[in-house]
Length: 279
Length: 257
Image (cartoon, rainbow over all chains, first blue to last red; front, side, top):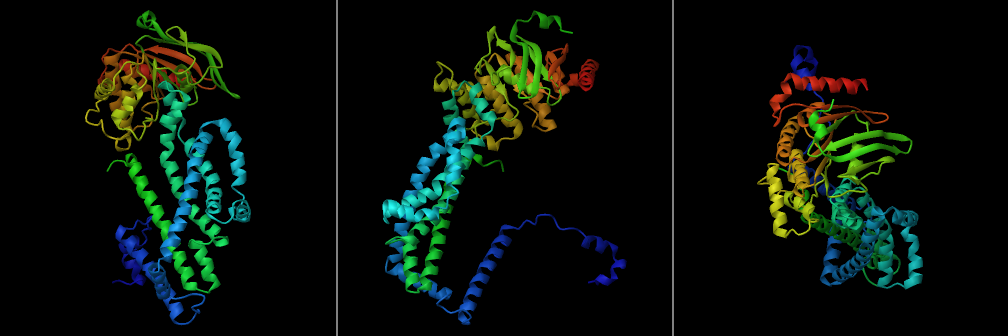
């Protein structure tokens, strides 16, 4: 190897050394996975190290091993499954109610200017009201049982969904509406047969994103007032200083969110296969 | 400047004294234009000369501010199946196969069974050279092939007037040339009235019986040229002197305007 100081003797080498890196470095799939795994393992090692050395007390941060142990215990006595089932049920009901209402309203909002004028400003106004602040109010209105959870999830997703779906419809190029008109379709037919199906992939994507939010709102509702569910168990654990249980449940909540997101992605890929291009 | 042939054609579309305002902007001013029956007319001009607006008015997608447009003597009050439109973007429905995109346009046809519709759609796709691609989704087709499907869709229901708004504007130069040859063949076979909007003068001269040149701000018809080149036309014609002369004349006019 020549040294850098002998540069004048090796002009070719110097030019090669001066080559600029491409603006975007593309990783192979293997490089990507390796990097991700290394980062993940590093994180676990650091966590273990911090707890094993006694740098942080287990009361504040238990070791990964004790978190896993606690989760296994909860799974064994069935509590984890019943908590997860109750929470999943609540998310599904609240989210499906919101979506079922938001799709027609959002689509009409995006397609009919007068409906847009009537609805959008209200939605825009309400969606900036923090949903968390509605929790006490909803308890007052409907108590602390399931309907209150549905309501919070509904309030947290519905208004955003309406705006997102309206936007998806508005993004369908005018040329498609014109096409429908030149083929002799009336406005309703253009909306039902052309505009709505064109907006569907985008609507599905918004549905996927808002499902993630629904999980967040559920936990918020359960933390405040509940007698079962993931959020409730976390509050209970705090009372008994069971930090390992809290962290375990938080991880499970993350996994549940991830699983539902992946399911939505897989369904989307299936429904919208036709968007896959050549090669 | 009009050829005798143009004068003897029955008018199919008549545009009389049409102006169009968009707020402060005058897109078109006092445009008179006749599309003869089975005539191929191109409208050329720089961007902003209102040529696309003119097409929208004939398509019935825009209403003129003053003046009127009529088809076969009846005033145009909205879009209709007597006029087919090919847009710059192919506007295919991505969830339908090439064949189903054409069948979609035939849904409005009275007295056609499902089987007849599919048969008509197959024929239309065959006309644009897409036999074998019936089941392909738009995303699997190249830009040129997508535009062929769009053309087939308009041919399938047999409108008497075909309106084309820079249909090849988004295609690369080589594909464009192929599409122009295809269009001239399709027109020879069907002989419907065509109005083609383009900014490509060579394309206009190659395809048309008559070229209408427009100048911008405000958009108006500056001149018309009857293109008396023999038909059927092949790309060889592009090199010959008469062709170059039409090309230069129109280019000069547009630059001067």
